[in-house]
Amino acid sequence: MNLNWMAIGVAFVVTIIIAIFSGMYLPKNVGLIGPIIGGLIAGYMVGGSYTDGIVNGGIPAGIAGLIYLVVVVLLFGSTITTAAIALGYTGSTETLLISALIGAAFVGFAMYFVLGIIGGIIGVAIKGRKRN
Image 1 (tube, rainbow, N blue to C red):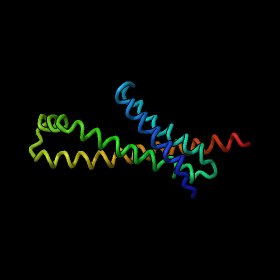
Image 2: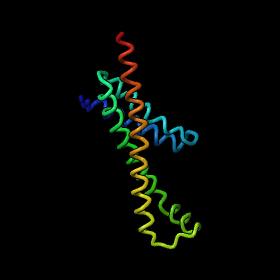
Image 3: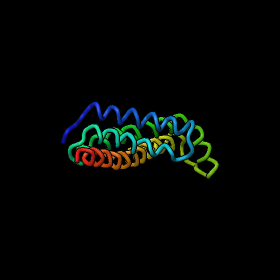
Image 4: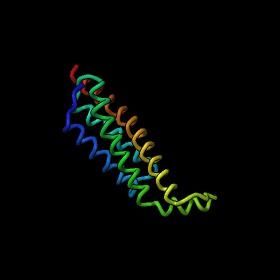
């Protein structure tokens, strides 16, 4: 397994930038292309084996997804609380926000990680195909 810190950094930055801009300017769910593009770039940069593409594409995209969704929950915590109360939630607000943070962190990491892996595999495949 070859960890390329330059590729990991590029994948992380690309994923975060696309995720942020997708929330502001792009239609809904277009931001999910961010981890694929980040993983693709990282996979292309490292080349070699598919394991390298999986590691260098998946990990930074997963971490970017974790950070992005946790920040979204922290920014919109009052909206989440209001919606939960409107739906009949009777527990404490702190418990609700902690549960939302844990859920967002898990879902964000898992979803972006899988998409980053897909991008990393595609990037390695493109580089391998280009060599031939």
